[in-house]
Length: 323
Image (tube, rainbow, N blue to C red; front, side, top):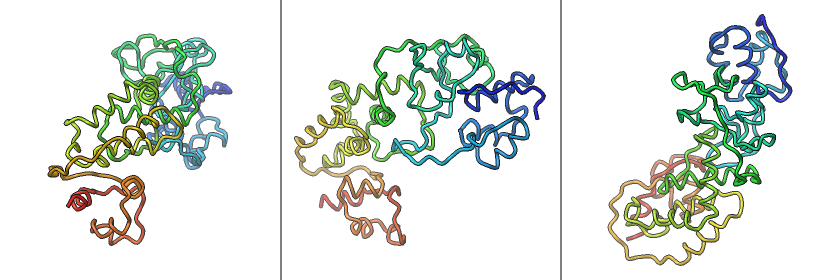
């Protein structure tokens, strides 16, 4: 056991308690007294029983701290809805000196008490926050900055979103930044910097016509690497976005109308060598039968079961379809 064991506060996150234990026992970093594996498990809210056995030798733990496998997936981009990096209300930190457990979940975008957005980047140096003792004093953990953190006031934009809608906003922003993606990169944890601003941008894409038109302009222009392909491939990223949205948004209506009005141009020579999609999206969105997939893509013929998320290069299917 550590020599100094302050009581854990009721709504305190485990990683916050670890930071306080570090500070109170005179350590500079949690890695001064925890193994890298134990610290990583705490940071990721992924404490398993093997970690629990070792950690409780150092400080009190409850079985509620053991990670239970999530049974709900809200987003096609990530599995867990806890953030790996700190998100905090600077005014709460200044008042209490600890980080609250609800701040770790992405459906908690702002502090209801102070009506300020949670921050995950320093407003002064722009660096992402990381789990370090200076956070307890409301200080930027970047040693080259070390200035007081400050959360921006709530503007009402994101005050009434449910978690599935927040995930939709994150997905939409992802396509706005990378409009030509034909498959989604999956992560265990949300991978976003400046979380509240990311959600705001995604919400604009989903609800503001001019933002939607900017997305359509990107897909319609010659800078689209798939501009010489038939429209169902050229606008496939938009179909992909629509397919993985949880809620109804104005974008869905606009996109449906846009796609219905697009006419196929005359076939043009294909000068690309890759069009990567998952098996599931090839079947559901491009309406390519499994038998066609297997006959065209040799590596699929050797598999007894084809994983839905397996990525394939569909360019040969596209070329053959145009002949």
